[in-house]
Length: 295
Image 1 (cartoon, rainbow, N blue to C red):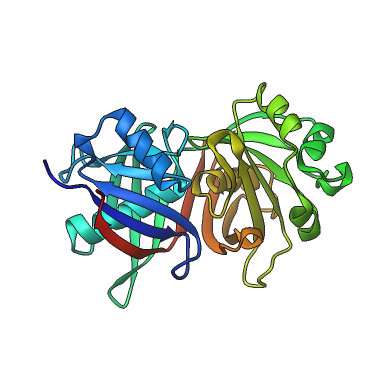
Image 2 (spheres, one colour; image 1 turned 90 degrees about the horizontal axis):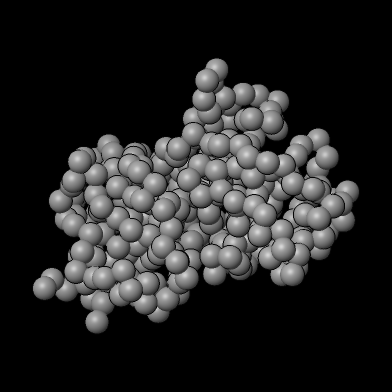
């Protein structure tokens, strides 16, 4: 039996020890579902991925994603980080695209290079699905903010590009910083929603280079607050063009996340509202932190 090789990758990060940590294991085909779940709980990152084989199947690499609590059909930073490991450690040469076979389907990740090194990885997500809108009064109580902290130009809405999120537009960075999840209201609210993650955002930012500040809470998945979230930001990208947040039917923006928990992250969002479909891409950088054998 081949030994499990373990990588630690910081994803959606400009440098080490920023962004969202990811554990990636190779040769995961030798593990049972229960073993994968136990390893994900032991690693205790927001997600851990398992590369099942070194060869492509149907044009992609079989990958499974686990949080400490459950398996996920899709998640953003694990998709980007795992594609980065596959390119660096399995393929070894520059490639334009790596395709991951996930529970949600095939997700392509494209590579941009700078001076011969991987720069920004881009992930094309599934077209967003827009679901129901939520009562702002209850959402404000869940976030421990005032109802008038929510930007009343736009709705609070469930959106999905694979994993649904509740998108909440806030007016100010102060409101974003003050937000805290009230567990009892959160648990009551998500009983009636398909989405369990809550993404809040505003147009004020810590860095003047960025366009939005974001926080994401997902206690349901065992992640009280995530430092960088590709799937939820994909939902946000679709939401932004659907509701013309910037007054346009397309966006190409920079989003900061994780500042409040000391893991500053940077995501790149592109989206366009075409006549029959919204296209969404999420980009970011990845940095290898460590490699070793999993005992």
